[in-house]
Image 1 (cartoon, one colour):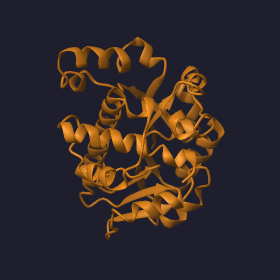
Image 2 (image 1 turned 45 degrees about the horizontal axis):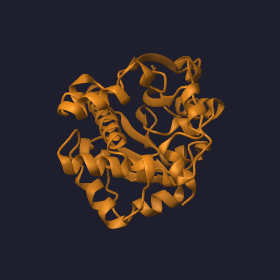
Image 3 (image 1 turned 90 degrees about the vertical axis):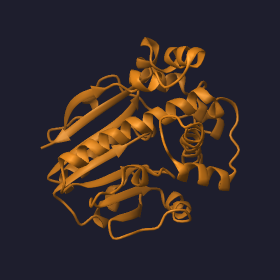
Image 4 (image 1 turned 45 degrees about the vertical axis):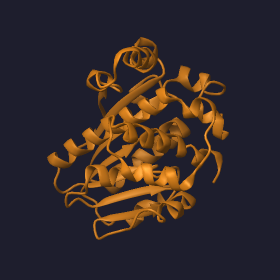
Length: 261
């Protein structure tokens, strides 16, 4: 795998870690894959604080997907940059068609642990080249999640992707986390992804940077809700809140929702 693809092991470790501790997520698949792969992480990428952050971030995305699925029974779910994530298991397809999308080499790895069904398919494709959309026959409504992906795409590449999604589907609900430009600048030297060889990332300061004539910014979500911080105890709760839920963290990470009606 190239260095960008290797970043999938960081959230995989985080979800495995919190699942074993009984925090935020019940993710037995992450535990299984992490144990089997035995990938070696070092430095900041194996920090328990980062693991907590990855676990909470995924739980927030899971909640949003569940809500959107309950609101739109005819929508397909598309997880762009799925890595080895088991959201389809954690959330359940509930009679929704579900498509997990990632680079061919990632999907090849993924198929060692996940099996396709009538409702669940894996698609090999690059988020920057939207030809993979032809593999999705449905065109009415889509729930799209991009967790930990936008920072590897330029603003123009993100706009190309969202424009393609808007062309393919009549309606879209999109949730995407993003770095700020400050975080992108800091990430060249002080980001856990550096530990797997990534130094080039991108950020935005205005959520409308991803907006277009068809896709509108809806609202910003809280990245680390207080209810998850409260699951930690004492000193850990204090440190985690300072690192990932304070004013400084908002200068680094944001969570945006968009919609096409």
